[in-house]
Figure 1 (cartoon, rainbow, N blue to C red):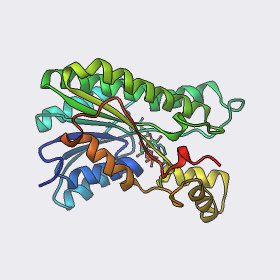
Figure 2 (figure 1 turned 90 degrees about the horizontal axis):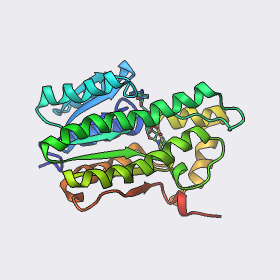
Figure 3 (figure 1 turned 30 degrees about the vertical axis):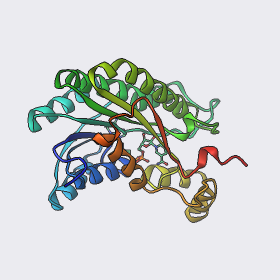
Figure 4 (figure 1 turned 90 degrees about the vertical axis):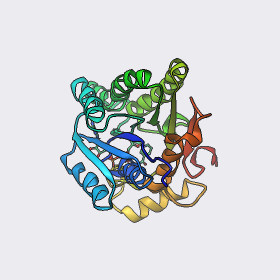
Length: 256
Ligand SMILES: NC(=O)c1ccc[n+]([C@@H]2O[C@H](COP(=O)([O-])OP(=O)(O)OC[C@H]3O[C@@H](n4cnc5c(N)ncnc54)[C@H](O)[C@@H]3O)[C@@H](O)[C@H]2O)c1
């Protein structure tokens, strides 16, 4: 028996990193998973799930575009007859100071990180209201909790996602829709590796430096986040809504 048996979940950005980890763990817990990703390579995640006997569908989509976001939700329901969990995980980073950030760069980060959460949640919530309930899990960041240099656009979107989570939880509770946000510390993903390499060509040294910023003395793995996403997606968390959960190795409370 899986903890997510009979559930159908959409994982945006499910083709890589944290989203891939969540998609795979969801499937291993019995969920049917729709991997919605802008990168065609994400088909591989659906294939990996199917090879292990799970049920998954890849939908090529830019979830910051209204037509694509709507299609992902509609296709899921048409194909599997239901939708129970939406994981708003797709996101990009921009490592630039305020003084370096160009207007179009700002707009791109806001569109992909924040507009996508609005659109996907809006379309999924329409369905959840009629279906009698549902779960939304957003991917926030430690940058929404503590100061972080050189991520102004990214931080603005993540802070907004944390606030938007509370807003949605309040409005949607009457429809039995729960909304929570996870804020990961540094997680070993292609995004994090790209980021390390952009600031330090010595990847091992950069990883060690980052590990030291976490009380755990290590950075996280996608599975560390996926374990919490399973809990938040399951009935085990039916009394939990509007909350922020750190999977950050103690990063936000470390101090000096
Ligand atoms: N890795 C970390 O250390 C870390 C820390 C805190 C928060 N996060 C957050 O976790 C989430 C996942 O990050 P990751 O590290 O796994 O990144 P990643 O780059 O490995 O994966 C992100 C995935 O999102 C997809 N994507 C990007 N734009 C999209 C769009 N418009 N439509 C559909 N798919 C799109 C990409 O193709 C990719 O498959 C992001 O929201 C990120 O901000 C990551």
